[in-house]
Image 1 (cartoon, rainbow, N blue to C red):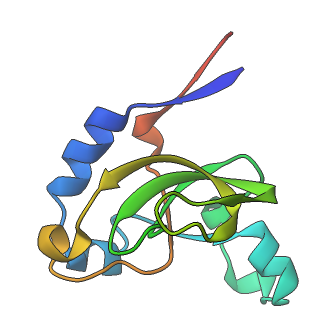
Image 2 (cartoon, helix red, strand yellow):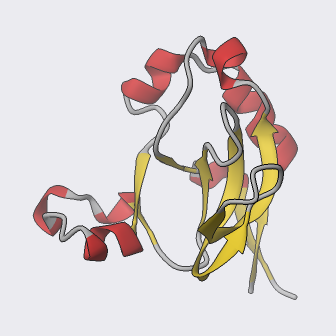
Length: 122
């Protein structure tokens, strides 16, 4: 099984949102499993649906003031433009300028809504 992301619909959906929608939980904040283990976060306060496991796609500011789809990995990969090595593999940039689109940069990890993810057989 392979995971497919509907990038066009996701981009259209994200462009209709505002910064407050992210704060109010319309897009769920994510927590990488590596960060939970490394920083010994209290697991009782984290919802299972917000945990990002190895290989899962999520939204994050990777390059700078953007919103990109990346996949969590154990190995470090170099990010485009910046060259910084992070434990994720770059997918595609969805929003190039968060400041212009949302009025403020978006920091942190964000879960991709399930309606834009689809499992298909190879």
